[in-house]
Image (cartoon, each protein chain N blue to C red):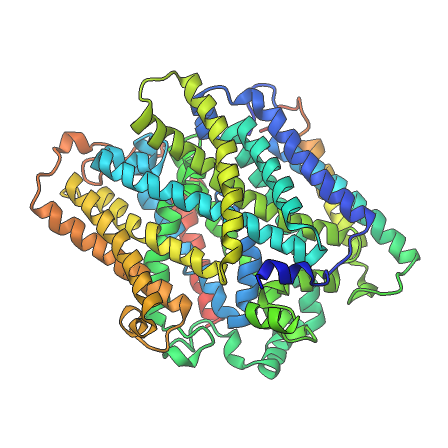
Length: 73
Length: 567
């Protein structure tokens, strides 16, 4: 939803998922190579890596698809 | 010793890393940026209070649901599912889906065609000024109280989970909400609610996924719950034949008639907090589709709220207890099950996103209350009773200021509820006081053209007064429970359901009785407001895939299947 030349809400959501996803992915990769002394349950699944990557990909798709100036709402 | 002083000395559940804090700070920065960005698009009353009435069905629908998905909702119902088992899912399924579909297909046309700004505004058109005054004042009172409860519950979460100072949490979060709603009005609230909805899912979805992996799937989860508690905890309907056969102490009539037919119908169809989001839709078809889209997602919410509670019951090595016992023993209460599960599975980054989800839930709930309060205060109290002929700019300015004042009052009520023992009890009590009778008034107003202004007003007043009276009666004499809730074994939840049912029936009875002896409005005055004298605009030539009734049927069928699967 946007008006005139304004920015779509989906673009804001894309930014949010992309930034959060990259931060989570980075933290997950770091923990993959440097396991903490106190691991969370199911640490072996490295949820941070795949969940962060998934969020980043979805966020990137939204950012590109709803980028300002592309005329989508 | 107050709850607050005890919690102040309690150890925190989790420790945040730098990346977690960056995620949380980024979230606050983004919601403020959206508010500042939208400031330029909230210049007229229609823009500020109704978001220009140009939202798509998807945005209105997600916002409609998100405004209801406050932190109290997330934490409270996760705790309730640990305590009562899958019965808590009734509040998401029979306690929401039929009502949302009813709003979409039956009531939305009248709200939308009448071009009202609010539910009290509809009552003004249908029943006159006294009914609007009564409902707007009671709604404004309920809204700031609910906003305060939401604010306090979030601050409590941050205190328990992170060890943050309660005053700091209340101040930072409420100021953020005040800024972005005051700047961008309803449009800003809606945009942020959609963002918050996505973040809630992104932050909370990992818990059930990892929990089910650890438990060995649904069958493994049921087996563990049968060992740790009882097999009854995973049945939705089969234990509701008698009050004392299930953990909630409720009978199926309370769930079906109290929750499904009254409380949820009242909340989802007449609570302006949620209805306002749908009124912002760009056309009637979008306004009808929005609650249906909301219902589709509402059916999925138990996956991130109820399931974590059940997983906590199955997997946590500690036994959670009631709030009072937790304070006395230094243990963990039911309401902490969601953060406990978060801490169980989520490392750095994921933990920050999970906490952001809880904060987002709080903000969406609070912004919903504040923006609804602002509209009702400005249009239904200030403009109707105090200053009738001011300019549109004046009302926009009043809207911005009332946002700030509404948040300030909410902060006051947040400190007020700190002394309440059971927050959920008061929330349900508020709904039964103001929402249950309102449903009967609005429904009769929409569907029965013989209902008169006097009938509407006296029915609403009698319903509200009787609900408060029943609540006070049981507080003074607990034995009265056997009359109000039909059984001495009934517990708080059951009492709330039955009180809502009686107050709604009393409201309906008085409305009908008074209407039959007073003069009705002429048909011409009821055009656009009442079934039978209103021509509903055709949806035009659209495919089956775009028709609201088609998607309502799909959602309704899935709702039936879910209830059978978990019977």
